[in-house]
Length: 372
View 1: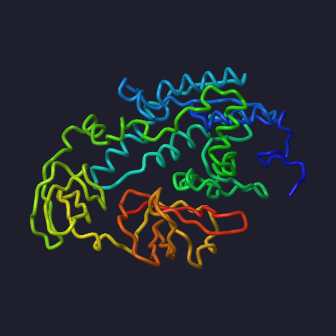
View 2 (view 1 turned 120 degrees about the vertical axis):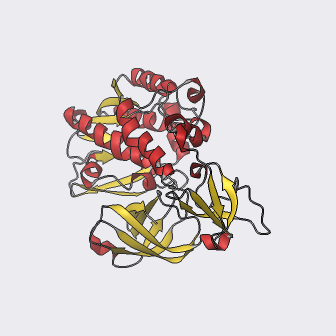
View 3 (view 1 turned 180 degrees about the vertical axis):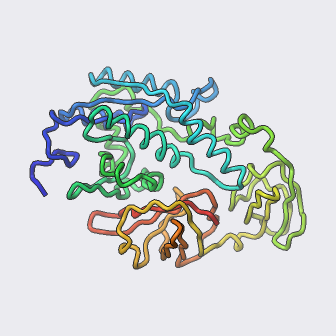
């Protein structure tokens, strides 16, 4: 490896290196922009306007709201960097919101943040960055990127509480080689400390917690807005197929859910299966939630296939623990995953992400979407 690499792994002086920083208006991306500027890079900040937020949305803890755009603009002015706003509401509606609604109507539990990264944030922003002749696209995600021999691999962040690698599994190889994630080796407290030293107005800004277009976590209201006819009553059945209750719409339920079933039984009942075609919910005791075998489709593999010959680590939800399992690839971009131990609440629509340990940490090997 050359000794002339700059801090983002390129053989150029920072002053001759142009970087686009995706600036959401939060402390993480603002700090990254400040770090790049301080190191002497030519920085262009880009903020995406993704949806039209009403008053009730702007007040909640969400990213990409009108307030966030103003915050990003102030940070750019403070740092004296170029700043552009791209209006992507239509792209976001088609690529993310419509998919989110459709997924719930199929009885799935979608992850819109993955769709957002996969579409507007990395696909479209990637293209814009290339058009601007930028050498790299930089974000404030908490993942590690390590570049060797002009190839970049993604790793879990050092800050396990902040790690976002699960949400980035669908990044393409071309995108990954162009992306950089400077915060992957830092703790959140360190990020805020740097923001304060740079005197950024967002240094103490709370983290966004909700999905940006879902006010206060109320996803049912979003579906009501876009598909008001989707709230259809249907049967709640036990695992023997007996009707034991009525629900107000399958979009109100996810696999593993206990609250809101409104059916009494001597043992606690959980949603075990959702049959969207028949508008039915199946409930049963907790021990029926455990699964070992998962079918995946639409795979995105970032590693050599030989890295899968032994057991790998698997994550089946963003907040889930790492599970040991074996991945068996099929010919139609699908795979069967066999977990070493039973895991509760595995839900179609979620992602199953693969990891492997090497000398740099937990490497992201890719992943796929849980079909059943």
